[in-house]
Length: 137
Image (cartoon, rainbow, N blue to C red; front, side, top):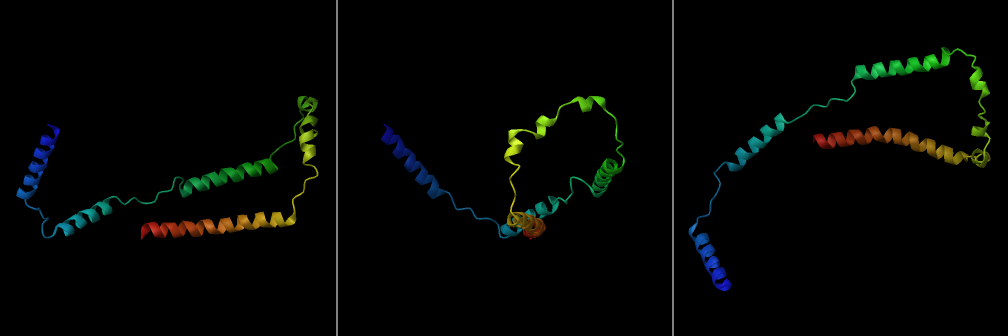
């Protein structure tokens, strides 16, 4: 029974395929589709808008510089008797800080880290411009 049903379905599909004609698109189908695509691209373009505006950065930098200036020049020494009573010697006289007391960083490692930081600061803007141009074009 299953073979008969399969044969019937196979014959039916062959007959349907032979009887139907091949549909072809209109003459300027590609041009009309491409015009619709370009219209979509024109409407969906978003302008770059930073998260923090220039005015925001200026305000943030003024606040930061004000805090630094206050910390440098505006702090008055206060007399706190309770702070003198605390024993904070445990923070700097322990075995962990004693392990690192003889540790020194070689000059070549310091130069390598400084050079790496310098090159990183140069390459980030260059790569950013490269990828921005690549995405635009």
